Image (cartoon, rainbow, N blue to C red; front, top):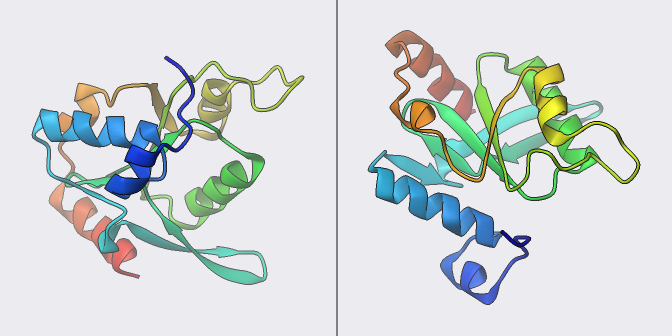
Length: 150
């Protein structure tokens, strides 16, 4: 599979990358309810000395947040560490075009290894069926929704 630079089609459909178009279609085909960068997908978090908002790519009805990544920048990694620290109940999972890609040129660490080290679940190219079928306790789902409302 080639890289997922933003195409005219992705732009016309309102997505930030071709990969998000593919993930969106997979979720539609799976029949799972979800939203794409919707109002409930927003997560407030504090960056040292600044309040920020993170707009999650996909929010499944079971409370799983899916972040579709072709490139996983240093800034992205820092942001997600802060969010995890400030909102440990959130279930943010990464879907990479290539989980074996190195963090940067010359690095020995892959995207997958970084996720393992930090404690994020991840997959490559396709949303795992287990993520779609995951059932979360109602009380936990309510707490996640409370955080997402801000």
